[in-house]
Each structure stands twice: as C-alpha cells, then as structure tokens.
Image (cartoon, rainbow, N blue to C red; front, side):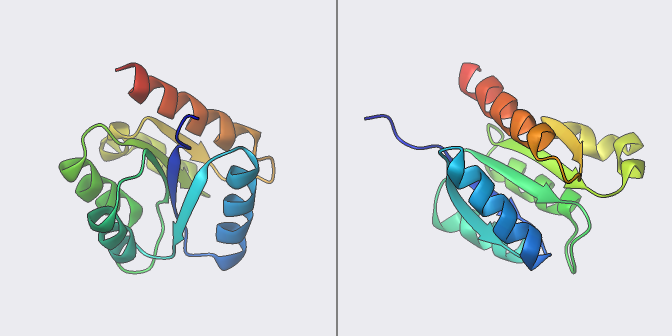
Amino acid sequence: MPRLQRLLIVEDDPNLRRLYQEEFEDEGYEVLVCESGEKAIDLARLGAFDGAVIDICLGGMDGIEVMRNLLAERPDLAVVLNSAYTSFKSDFSTWAAESYVVKSSDMGGLKTAVREALGTRRAA
C-alpha cells in the first residue's frame, strides 16, 4: 500500500486551519496543522512532510520567511503560498514557491495547486 503524502498547513485562522485539514484529509493526505511559522519550523525538524500550504500573513514570522527556512532545509519541498492578498504575487521572494493561491471560498484552486506542486516535486 502506498504511503499517504504528508501535507503541512500553516494557517493562523483556526477556522481555516480546521477547514483545510478536513478538506485535504478527505482528498487522501495525511495533514499536520500549525498556527505559526515558528511551530512549522519545529515540525519540520521533527518529521518529514511532502508539501506545505503556508499563509503569508502570520503573526510573528511571516509565511515568506517560513518558506525560506523550510526550503533551506528541504529544497525538494513542494510549497504553495496561500494569501488573501494578491499584492504578494509581485514580490519576487514568493517565486520560490511552486504556486501562489489567493484565498477563496472555492477550495478547488488550492487543491489543484497542491496536487500539481506535489506531482511536480515527485517527478523531479
């Protein structure tokens, strides 16, 4: 039986964190969740995951800094940045992510971005 892909969700909004966890578990992923960048980095040290969905606007360390830290340790990690703001798309530091998805009530775009990011990283 193939191993479930592990996905880390970094989201400070508890309702979105719960929604994302449920939605991605329904898609067949093993999901880890945390509410801060610092906790995401701690989780990365404790165990491996295949991909991460990271909110950009977090309290404390922002999502771009979290992504930099995670990719420094795991350059093969599939990262999808998730934000309510489109303005970060023009920030070249976000370009290290596989995808940038603007938050929406329709989870289809985020699910597709995660699936494609994980598929791209696996193929590489």
